[in-house]
Each structure stands twice: as structure tokens, then as C-alpha cells.
Amino acid sequence: MVGVGCVKKETEREREGERERERERKKERGRINKKEQQRGNIHEEKNKEIERDKQREREKDREPE
Image (cartoon, rainbow, N blue to C red; front, side, top):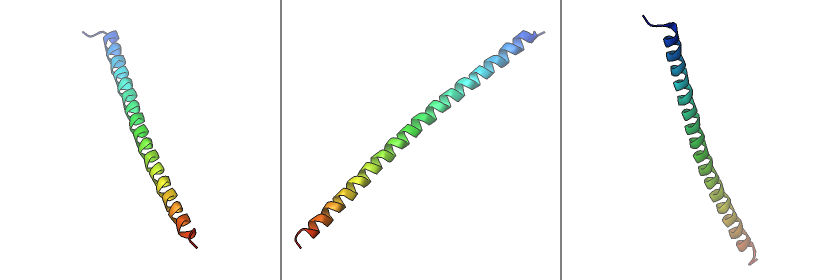
């Protein structure tokens, strides 16, 4: 016969295992979000650089007049 304490310990272990898996999932989501944010920042910088280049071209076109 299985004692009540054994069942209680088993469910406690299961809960702790689930908590651990949830922590790992959160960490992974954080890593993914960080990578996405970095990619977004890179694209933002490129867009700003392109806009600056366009502005310089416009200014060069205006100067000879």
C-alpha cells in the first residue's frame, strides 16, 4: 500500500518540474525577444542611414543652382 506522503511528494516533484520548464520557456522567449529587438534596431539604423544619404543627394542637387 502506498502512503499518502509518497503521493504528495510525487505531485510536489511534478509541480516543481513544471515550474522549472516554465522558467526555461520564459528565458527562451526573452532570448528570442532580445534577438528580434536587435534585428529591429539594425533595420532602423539602416533606414536612418538610407534617409541621410537621400538627404545628402537632395542637398547636392540644390547646390549647383
